[in-house]
Amino acid sequence: MVHPQKAGESMKMRESMEMNPGCLQENGLSQILTLVLEDLGLFYHRDVNGIGVLYSLLQAPWLQSLLKVHECLHQYIRKKPVPVVPKARALCSEVVEVLRESPSSTDSRELRRLLRGPHFKALLSAHDTVAQKDFEPILPPLPEHIPENEEAMRIVCLVKNKQALGATIKRHEITGDIIVARVIHGGLADRSGLLYAGDKLVEVNGVPVDGLEPEQVIQILVHSEGTIIFKLIPIGDRTVSSHTMLFVRAMADYWPQQDPAIPCADAGLPFKRGEILQIVDQSDSMWWQARKACDLSRCAGLIPSNHLLKRKQREFWWSQPSMSHSCLKASQLSTIGEEEDMKIDEKFVEADEETFESEELKGEEEEYGSDGQAYVIAGFRRSMRLCRRKSHSTQFSCYSRCPSSCYHTLAAPYEEVVRYQRRPCDRHRLIVLIGPSGVGVNELRKQLIRLNPSIFHSPVPHTTRPKKSYEENGQEYFFVSKETFESMVYTHSLLEYGEYKGHMYGTSVDTVKEVLDAGKICIIDLEPQGITGARTHELKPYVIFIKPPSRNCMRQTRRNASIITDYYVHQKFKEEDFQEIEESAKKMEEQFSQFFDQVLVNDDLQTASVQLLSIIRRAQDEPQWIPAAWICSDP
Ligand SMILES: Nc1ncnc2c1ncn2[C@@H]1O[C@H](COP(=O)(O)OP(=O)(O)OP(=O)(O)O)[C@@H](O)[C@H]1O
Image (tube, rainbow, N blue to C red; front, side, top):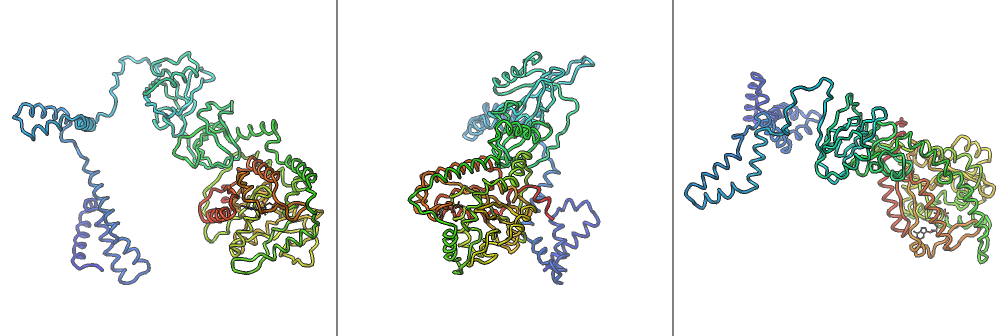
């Protein structure tokens, strides 16, 4: 509602503004607001859509206060305060002198004491510096006759603190001059804005650098304390670096202290695979500058460029192929398999496939959701899991998956990433659990689905095995012919597949998509080699590595647990099993941690289940780093 008196005032205000537009500045924004409110008031009473909200917003006391602050500041900028006296310090000394000679009283004594105080004197000195605009250092007068060919010099004075200088030097290949090789982003030299890559050093702390080796210059710098004075000839045509900020995920480890090729190891940025880096300077084709996304306040460090790291990886690859060549894992695992064969404990009775299947069925029949409904948890069947383990040792699956994943790791040492926030209308991200066999991946998955059957779901796997009398197509498995299965393999329709006891088993991309399209959170467990196949913009997988706890903790918590083997339905954990879990986890981390979005230690089962649930919630609802390619290819 517009008050009649106020309406009159604003009318006068509007007239005065129309007659004298300059007064708008004088009267300020709050007057404009009054006018806008008045106009809006008319619409408000006519109940025009949305006006009510705008009207209350503009009437909000906080907005009015903010505008008043704005006006005060505006007036202050225009008025520009001028000092009453430019030499307050001298005036103060005079007053102290006068007070000394005048008759003494308590007040005069107190005033004299205040004026003679060091803090007060320092304050007045600071005032005089500002009042006299005495900010620049006084430089000696220029010599009268400067030779024509004399190069312009710059004197740079930096105050060294505990932080490194943040610049590297080198000898110019042609002229032999000592030049600034690079200035580290965010370092002392960079923040000064006075040193640039290409500047030629003439003197450091009064010592001419002509004839010195770069290492000798570095020694001068290392041993100088406090102020460092550089005399230098600035580079002529300084290229302004574009500083494109780019975030990447490191797909390899890098230790500058172990790299003999780095120009300055101390300026290097060590990183581990999986860490997110912000690349701040790519002007050098060999050495980029980057900092870690988790600590953007720190100054940048040197990292090898994409091209250089790729070259290093290739050299390392050929020199130590067993370190990253996953194909070798097949032979390693088949050896483990052979050893396992020999470790059969005679106390246990060997179980045949039928026993396995009926044991499984028994387990499945006992599954009930929190809603009391009985249901079958797909993808938990023993043969499927054993097949997954066996798949490493088959030439077939290794041949089709491995070269691409190995090549992928080698081809892209850095993967560009962006921050992604899933919108409520988007599909959920696929949740992928990775972990060594026996660590509890399936137990955790089962717990999650059992407690939240309406939210979580696992895809039904495909098999070429004949259907049993008690099975239903699409419930335990999709039963398909060998030809159909093979065509799924050749059309890359399977996330992973393998062979067990002469039958093929696999998880198809379409069944995963079906779960996601139904609005559920699809949760699967994969062998690590399968991660690269699942990393698509459609599935946007969030990978959680399930890590074993300490050996002692495993002994305690797994006392009543049993593992799945080729031979036994229920077999207690043995020391060798714990050892194998630990070793296998270590290998997985060494080779695949660049793909892990989270690591969860499966210590106490209940705690781990709760943690898993909250990790998945965050993965779906909070911003996460994902490959930029997943966003670019979004429709
Ligand atoms: N935190 C835990 N505390 C106690 N027992 C656990 C825990 N996690 C898993 N277990 C038990 O350990 C055994 C093996 O777990 P699980 O079957 O989930 O292994 P897995 O990682 O899926 O490997 P695989 O697929 O080879 O069986 C099961 O008996 C399970 O109940």
